[in-house]
Amino acid sequence: MKTMPVISIGMPVYNAENTLAEAVTSIVQQTFEDWELLIIDDGSTDKTLEIAQGFNDQRIRVVSDNQNKRLAARLNQCVQLSKGDYFARMDGDDIAFPERLAEQLEYMKQHPEVDLVGGSALVFDSNHHVRGKRVTPEKHSEICRQPWRGFPMIHPTFMGKLSWFKIHPYDESLLKAQDQVLLASACQDSVYGNVQHIVLAYREDIPAIKKLLSSRMYLFSGLFSTYMKQQKLGWVFRAFLSHSLRLVMDLVFYVTQLRNFQLRLRSTSLSKDDIAEWNKIKKGISMPSDSEGKQVSG
Image: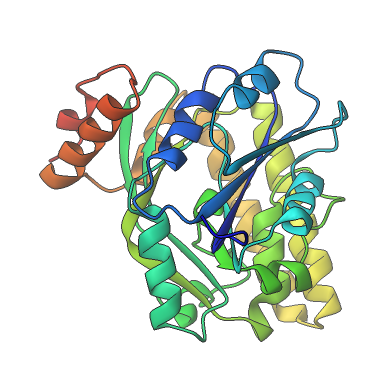
């Protein structure tokens, strides 16, 4: 491997002992091999650090300072430590599809004007039950069509030019919604895109009501601050209406105990090819089997 990798992958982790091995294995098994993986332990109190240090691969760097600085600060730290031309996000509880890095790198080479690319994702919960897939629009104009509502890009699928991430750091004052606020702050001088394939299996569980309310609060406050700075007063008003309505809908689904149904509505059915690839990936990283894919395949 060259001294300077093409892609740096940032993976901040906190108490991820039950999922980290699968996530790292999915990176080790990438078809594109010229990468480095930066695992930054955010003060875990379980066996996360021990598991991270157990991988015998020179491309993996583990950093730990026994402090808990939260996601945004750790992502900015990952960016500063990265040596690659490109920087990719990865969570310690998600599963990268084998072609993820290769597909996103090829997309950026074919579209040099693009600063940041995401992709579609298969959505599953911690019981390994598949909800379906979340498909994201490809073009910047589609992604930024209604900025007051948010941006259809899935955070753990982010990959972009390292230089872009250095110019546009995450807001470390936000405990939630850092990705959407980042996209909002950079959308007018950047170009976004999404690979039109599943690049990652995204773990999504039903959050506690307190966590849900907190996420909505941080999202709106971040968008409010960003659009006020940009003097987009119309966007501020529309953001207030949009996210107030979403909050009401979230509460309705919670009270009626239909939150799981709501999450399924956000996803589309998997094709037979999607299911076959997912089953192959699960087998390759020794995940438990399940039959949920057949139930959502339509």
